[in-house]
Length: 166
Image (cartoon, rainbow, N blue to C red; front, side, top):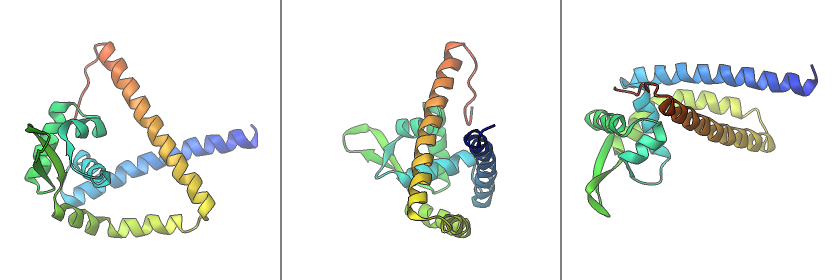
């Protein structure tokens, strides 16, 4: 096997290990916050948004069905992590944003893990960090595209699609 082939295999193997470890970490952090891991992912994704989003946007971001996304928002609202706002463009619709206390609550729990991840990144130079950021961005795009493809195949095959809260 060539050096490049060995390196590519190592990257694929380490990507699988990274994903598995991150799933475990995400679950542990969600347990620490006493919320479901899907709820934590939604909170993290909402934190990246520039403003309030619709429940339909949350369904798209999380891969949940619209009904499951609505139930997820209901849980998050009950937990005090999100607030609903009337949509100024459509009064029949609500927009969702993180509650101010949610950022603080998650930030406190994320403080030590964030420092640990930052220590890992400190080992790399700026050019290496650019490559890492580019890879993560591109890999996330591929992951979303493959999730969409599989979901469409599942619907086309009549397969039952299990979603969070169903």
